[in-house]
Length: 143
Image (cartoon, rainbow, N blue to C red; front, side, top):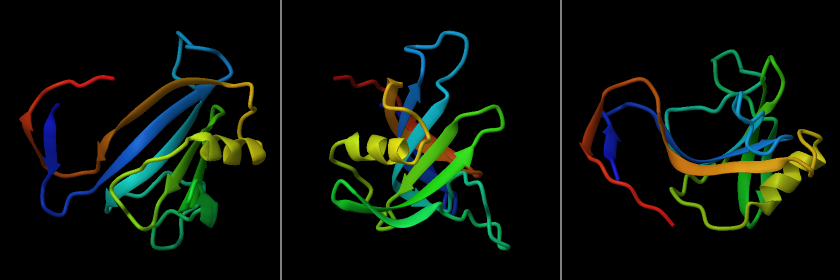
């Protein structure tokens, strides 16, 4: 595992990053759609189709109950097609435990992708904003 930490005042988000696509394991591109479940964050903001006058991302929906937690949902439609759907837990708990089914169902019910699409990958990790970072160690874990 690599231990990396942002500098004081630098932004980050801790997220489950899920990729779905009409094709199983596309080889010539990334999956078309991305679901992000933000479980911890500081200063970063999700991609969004709209921003307010202060430059802050505006959610597609707020206070959406999924799997026993409440999320603000942000939607970004990529110019070439496909979506990034970000589910941000405003409680900022730093962890997630539960089924992904409610998140898939929410996107399907809003017509962002069909239920026939393939789940191509599930990852978890950090995304860092601008700033300095310190890497203390490396390692790998699996399941």
